[in-house]
Length: 579
Image 1 (cartoon, one colour):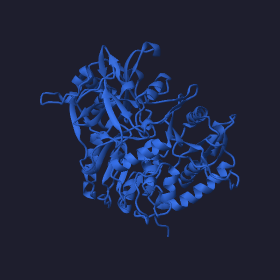
Image 2 (cartoon, rainbow, N blue to C red):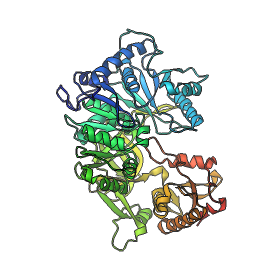
Image 3 (cartoon, rainbow, N blue to C red):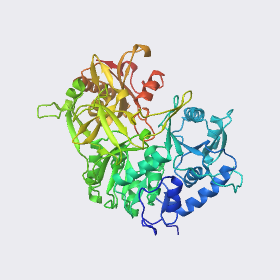
Image 4 (spheres, helix red, strand yellow):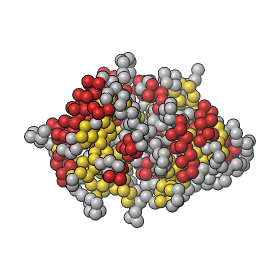
């Protein structure tokens, strides 16, 4: 009978001592820990100890060396599998740069996915691409006519080889990660051996990873939180990890919790929505979540209401709300930027949203603040160990507590740059090493609080409007009928003008939908005081990234392209209402 790798290894636990991924795997392979892959129902399907992973990766690397120039780029369709794990580390031993790429996400989206593959291939200048056998035909069609060789992720197309390996050194690169959901303008973010090992060291220290800890994850391995935080970082700390695929999680979120319960996992991460759907779709059963001491939240702005629901749902299962660790990260910083203090749970700051919109200052809400003007934000901690954060105004002046400004990050985890079709590698940090994250936030007692993306900020009649305020107002007014909303601005150059709100509506009843438009319109008017056109769209039609983060800019482009169905279930004229 197959058994998962143990949580405790037979070698001395070493944290943060490795300069390369191959050096770390060479050491981890001396022990008995490793990776474990489970089915949707939580049945153990494959076990890949670090010893076997190293052997298979080195053998595959010898075959890669025979057909790939040193330093070339190889696309890997990153499903949650043994084959991807082996091939990713084979690239490290072969000295070729892996480019993890997402799996297809939905039926009916094949053309869009093929366009994405073609764009990434061109931007990354891929030498070859490998994919699971079940989607090989899709990849071949996407790259037809190009010089990119397509093969199986199993490596069966590679020749037998005994060539000398050429593993990456400490000064070399490590991978290229493409930003979530990139299509027309894919952004390839370069990771170096230094940036990855440094960030993993910060993760281990910031989350107090110890001997005997165990990881459980459903996060996609083409996304930074899944690839770095839940796949590479555990190996660098010789920890065992248990995986289900993102699709398995979507079908049965309870399987994630089952793995934590049965294998006594200590660390697991998810965006807020993962906790929310796990609670909403829980149908009861025996769980023991008392081992889970780091329940990390990342990938998007932390939503306290989702975490409160999860904590109350699983209180009887031994889950402690003190285990929540709100975090902040982005691919340009490898992954981790900040962690909230451990064992303290979620620290929420309720502010007056009206004042924040007017003067960019997070004034605490008071007894006289109207409920419609209250907004809850979550403190995401201090900078990851060995790194710095500063918050500045548009002129670069550092800001103090509660003043909202641009979040800047500095340290060796910052990516060397992003790939551009025409310009090549574009550095991300300025001459002083600071990365402009593109996010807005403020300081709260030494912890950073995120308020939104700078590029999403809407300027109306001199007033700063956060799209999250509009979206929040819509969901409050719509209740269970509105699953998600996206707000953005259109200008004259878009052949339209004004602020638009697209709200996913679950109801097909005309009367309910018309009432929803009126209620949302009224609520938004009270909260932001700006004219907003409210449009209902079908469920699951707004664009989200692989981590579940709403992509307002891509949703905006989809809307301008006329790709939304805005007439289903109600007359067209009843859908849009301009205040």
